Length: 101
Length: 381
Image 1 (cartoon, rainbow over the protein chains, first blue to last red):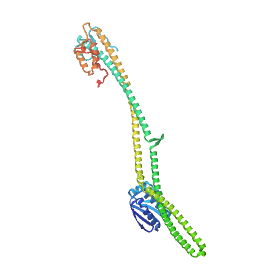
Image 2 (cartoon, rainbow over the protein chains, first blue to last red; image 1 turned 120 degrees about the horizontal axis):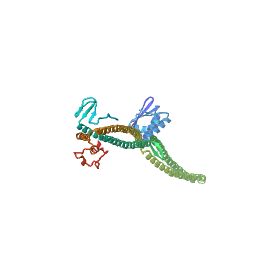
Image 3 (cartoon, rainbow over the protein chains, first blue to last red; image 1 turned 90 degrees about the vertical axis):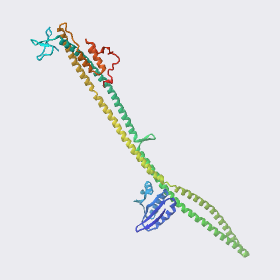
Image 4 (tube, each protein chain N blue to C red; image 1 turned 60 degrees about the vertical axis):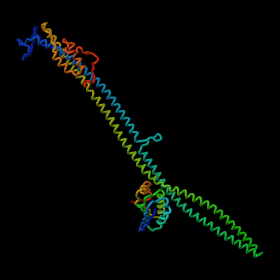
């Protein structure tokens, strides 16, 4: 998995690409740190280019949400497709994290 | 029934009108009838009387046949109605069972069961998500712990360095104290104590290193195990919920379909039973038929009696030479109309054998009362 951050006025859009699995846990921790530090209040995770997420990846997304809440920031998941969308639906993540199309 | 009285001669009173062959018009409303014509009339009268007898017998027989057949049919239809009713009850039982399953002796509606199972799977998925989140938190924590323990190892190394320097310093102090002679004696004692202290510190550092090494080893093992746990992807198990949901929905839908089809079947069976009951009621036409045939038979009996009486009276008025003549041609025509052998036999027996004429066509040779009688059989149709 790799990512790119685009910080605008009010929101930072993080575009994830490839596969988000346990092996990316260090990288994701770094990303969470970057998100906590940038000034935007809305942190949007754009998942449109993410092809796959495993259960550890879901765990990491929830940790990210927690860290954003601690930093008093809004955390949003956007444009999930395919397997990622199915897993998010089945896990009922929408009950915890706002999901946008 | 009465007839006008006839004169002792072969003259008969007839109504006005043209006279037939063999009759001469006379005076006083009387006609002279030829003996030949009277013979023929007597023959006809005889045959007609017996024909009426046979017709009466046949009507009674037919009525009896219809009665037997109708009763038999009614019984069979009643049986059929009962079976249709049983069938509808059986189907109703299936309908009652179809929508539920028995679990631990208790009947649970299928939709409740399905919802329950879906809830269980939802809980399972939620648990997987929670577990994954906790596992990742632990992984991050242990990452940090490992880093801290590394720092600790480094600090113990630092203590060693400081200790070596302390020890070296104490050694130098001891040497300098001995050079100072008596004046340095007290200082030598202090330097000696510092060396003891340094040794103790070295030993403590060594014990700490041993323990810290054990902790590091434990933390690394734990970290490895946790990584293995967190690295076990449970997303396929989570996605299995999709399939289970679809299967359950399909199961409920299919059961509903079965139930609806079976309900229709139960209704049809019950309708059949009602229709058959109507059919049985409809078969009471047989009673009416029987009454009508009895009425016809009564009329025929009266006609027959009248005919017999007239025949007897005419016979009494006839001169001795005049006898009745069998109308053979007419009889043959009559018999030809019967296609049913058993009925024909009864006619022949009655008309020919009881009459004065003998059959010219060999009817007498037939064993009329014999075993080839097939009365009441389906050959009728």
